Length: 253
Image (cartoon, rainbow, N blue to C red; front, side, top):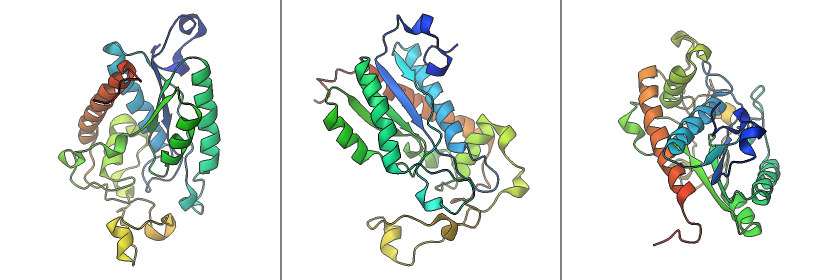
């Protein structure tokens, strides 16, 4: 039993344990090129959150990892078979209930451990923070940790060298042979401002990628995945420790 994983804990232990913060992993269930499992984002969230929490726990932080939410916002992939969608309003309702539960039980710090690029939390956190001023709510995106170029040759956006390497490290049994890997080519928008990043519209996934991947996975290896996993979980573990130990009334200098 890992005492920092709620799903593995029991009432005998928890009834006398006081946690400093909660971590809510949130993934998605969607196609990841031809070769990676639909649960790629969930697998990444499960493993990275658990290892990061362990590293923080071993230093004395009392953080509890909640069960991963397996569905995310997939409105741009509505025509891709069995890509499961939660509308943002549904996410908001779930998040509201989680926050109200934690607040009622005296856990006033929550990290949303996001593992899917389609999930967008800022407006929700602003609104829920106003409704629950005793709560400290933050959002992490492990896939946006800097310096990925130090670990990979071709960083993409979805089912790329990064994600393929991670799943080769975490769940190699779920990765198809390399002969089945798609190239992950992305069609760019004809209006350049979208590619430059200062104009935004949701991408129609089936129109930008033939294999649902964005980013070439061909140079992925389990060794790269292991090195990156260690770096990311160390960084995330440090952040979890800092948040757990922080005074909510003294956060700025």
